Image (cartoon, rainbow, N blue to C red; front, side, top):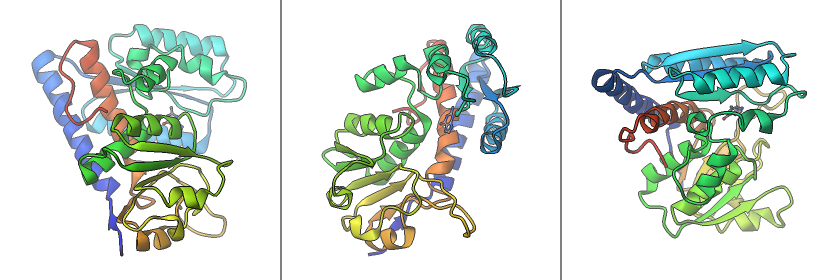
Length: 294
Ligand code: GUN
């Protein structure tokens, strides 16, 4: 079998188109322009690339982008004061603090200072709790993007066996909650899981989010399974980006697979934009965009 390639780049373009339509409607019918504030502390090169890309795409869909670049030695008090200002600013509907933060800053404290209604990353403890109890939450962008692609490919996910490899707060744990919400039977595997290949072989859906290049091999995959590769890795001596799955061997066995690059990656920012529209609608008591939320 050779897998269907799930084109995340094309899917993300479609989501951005839907977001742009909603933004236009918010402007025309309600005089509202959604605004997204992105806070970057320090000069991490990868973070700078992400933040630039977020700002560009925010403007492209018709929203306002507010970038706050702070020096690496910014004090916690100054960062918290900025977040307070953004929480109180009616022009700001979404706030994202780019992670990782410099070591002297307490990420949990900073994230939990964001107004949960503006927490478009879905990292605030209130949103984590709302998602975990099946209530209306802001949902982390990368898992939301994976869920959208899975729903688009399969329709219903009900009753499917899903194995999430990786237990991070950003991807693994919220991904498992979303799959549970769609009535999958969910296993969270991680670095201490015994006989990982055997666990993965039971899965109708595999989500690889470990950050180890090409760890998942084709002989771990149940024939016909859907493989969602969240990894974005570099390998010394080889050009380009590599996922957590060995693409060629997995694509021989899987029914469908996301490539790296061009799979999950583009969906993350598209979902950030979608979350900003959702937050704007909720804050103003308006109907939420269909198909852009969990
Ligand atoms: N750093 C890597 N991924 C993310 C993300 O999804 N959100 C934020 N805020 N920082 C990140």
